[in-house]
Length: 367
Image (cartoon, rainbow, N blue to C red):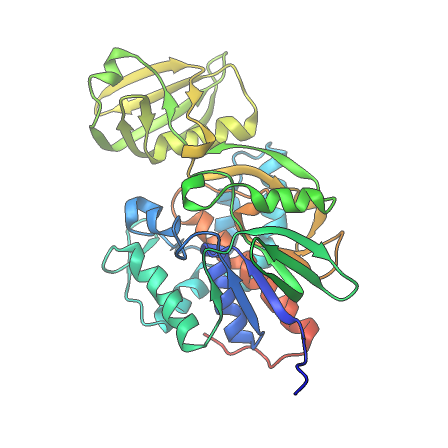
């Protein structure tokens, strides 16, 4: 009996937040797919989010969400990013993400500021919900399958690993950034994109602690200040950024949401001469030009595949048709508080919806 060989409709590279949501979206739209993950399990980095509690989105309107992504009104980089993400977030805003998890029978909890968590406070609940959906829908999942290359063909792509190759009509690169390499985010998606003639914005640490050996911080190591604040000042004393939130004192210096978001502002703004003031209880401490911790420890990667080479209406490459990107592999990043997972989910959904529209597959089922 002669065997017929035909390509899978969609190969998803990366089993993190974007990759898992892409597989879920493929089920929703009736797109045949398989999911490839370099590590032994899916969602390794998702399991670490919000200290293992998984703040999966924020219950706000997508217009507010987009404004929150911008570091300042004058910051071209984050303004361009928000404009790029607008179509994806319009299609899948935070409240549809909440509805998605409720439809998977995940009880959710809303915090006073709108942050959304699984009700049991366990990130495993979110990852297991994706796993159950894929198992019940018979989505092939290939773990321990690090992709080594993507080769464009006349019809689709050959996706290679050390041990086998896949023929796919469409490829979605959802490999994440370059932080926490032990969890699988090693920057390989950006390398594939570069080899396929895409521009890659240099990657650097985002949402990361700031180093200081100041004794006032070192002696507080291990202490958390919930009602704290971080303010960034220019050399002439103007307030450039102000965020209220937790500050943690660490052996290396400062961390916590307020510090992370201040560091993101500093990195995007490109300022090198600044003062940061942190409020710990009633004490205000000032520091100048602190160094960020290494990229491998960062919550998010700033930089990645250039947005100029991706169509925001579809997430499709402007260079190679049928090649798509989603999540942190692209030059997108947000503040703490559920923004980065939301962007991963919404861009993955946009990519798969675009593939479905081109493939004339059945219309979507509403959440």
